[in-house]
Image 1: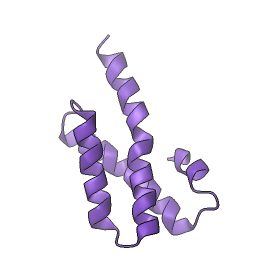
Image 2: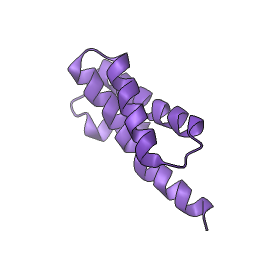
Image 3: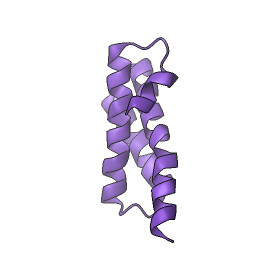
Image 4: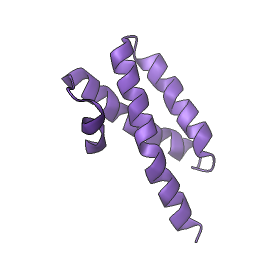
Length: 82
């Protein structure tokens, strides 16, 4: 979640919350999907952000949160499959 700050400089508090929400949404979508297809998880996260936010800045920040979680999810998936 701290990973949102470097992408949102200067950041508004609302945008930071939206980015953090994107991170959480990704985790939720991954859990629901059993974490098998990370591209699908990312698409579902992006869709949830679009639905949750009407303001473009907050929507963008939420999408950043989704994107931000992808490398971590890929790394976890790689470690589990070893």
